[in-house]
Image (cartoon, rainbow, N blue to C red; front, side, top):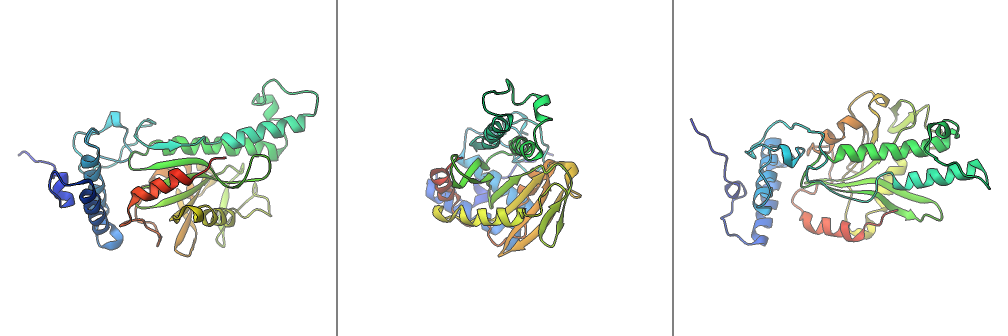
Amino acid sequence: MVTHSPDPYDILGIKPGASAEEMKSAYRVALRAAHPDTGGSPERFALVQRAWKEISEPSSLPTGSSRVSSTHRESSWMTRSPSPTGSTSGGLKSYGHPGGWFRELYGRQVRSWWGLGSTPENIFDPAIINQVPPEIRHTLDAAIAEEATATALAELGPPFVVWHDVLVEGDRSSTVSKIDHVLLGPSLLWAISSENWGSAVRIVRGELVGEGIPGTQKPWATLWSQARYFPKSLGVKVSALAYVVPDNHAEHDIALIRLKSGIPCYLVRQSAVCELVTDDTPATSRSLVGDDLFPVREKLSAGIRFV
């Protein structure tokens, strides 16, 4: 028996030849109706997203998963189990330089620690790295953690967009406050921090603690403050937060740190970060379902400043 994939226009409830505004309006209505929070299902929600991609980007190949590279896509865009490929060409739009500021800061710190009048030829020489004080080594580890998260996020495909090394306040000549990764997906806006404190971390009373985290540091409180301050001037609201750590530094793939004002913050293993951000049903009241994502993306693109 021959079966046929549903027509994407039928999925969105419009006719071929509809105007761009009519298509966007139909997509928003269909997305809202399909979302699990409003009585839909994850399968229907994914189907609507793929139907939108099919008609909004006619040149793109049909896809079975938003995480599959364009070189490995199936011939049908019906829902399938995602199969990560390891390719970084899946269509994710990426801006900024992950780990760039911390690598620069590491260089400054090493040269200051090394002393005036001399500079090591290669500040990334393992012999140098093994000599530097722990706080300087942590700067480099944080840069590497950001790069690793960026590599993992690169497996995502449309409609995800990510900005790395996003400035919250300050400048390079003074103290810099930044969000490592700002990720816009089909229904959520994420503020993500990548960290490597050198040892395992755990959740205690809504905060992260561990041997490598100084007692004065409050990771959740810091990211919460940054996520609230950063988008105010842009007219957008962050939906969810996440701390990404090396796999062996967290007990579970994904764990809720705290839920405050409808905004969840998760502790997530690096290998599970794509699983987290592609789950469209987290415990958040800040879902973008039904909003027009086009102006949100434009506001972020126009307003974000990089370190």
